[in-house]
Length: 188
Image (cartoon, rainbow, N blue to C red):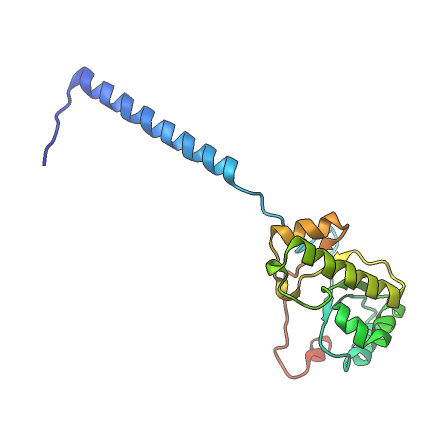
């Protein structure tokens, strides 16, 4: 190994050049990171309020067998919810969609066919949202503007495409899931 011994002025000069090179490199890296980073488009996960409140949201994608029971539980407890409806579900269960709307619950879209939205093109995202909006609004009579991507799958394109169409993208901050055989037990 070879070691150099620096003394006096030579040491100060080498130290100054080294510091200048490091500062230039750090500045270049910092600038490169700052200028190349794309801001992340985020959906709404929660809203701060001065009151203690929560928003109950429910996805409608599979069948309508529990709609009447769920509506009764919500009515008994004076709870309003937002139901995110898949367009295909709306096609199969228009009476259920009308019941949700007639009970005063807010409706939103959960897409038209329940695809992985983060894998869709802008055109596909637009088609999914427009089709679901048309179906849900025609059946319910409600204007809708909320969208929840299936499986929570989103990226910048999903959020920006939805917002360009006048939608607000909603996610969840807590998920109770179906941890027992009776999903209604949480209300008891």
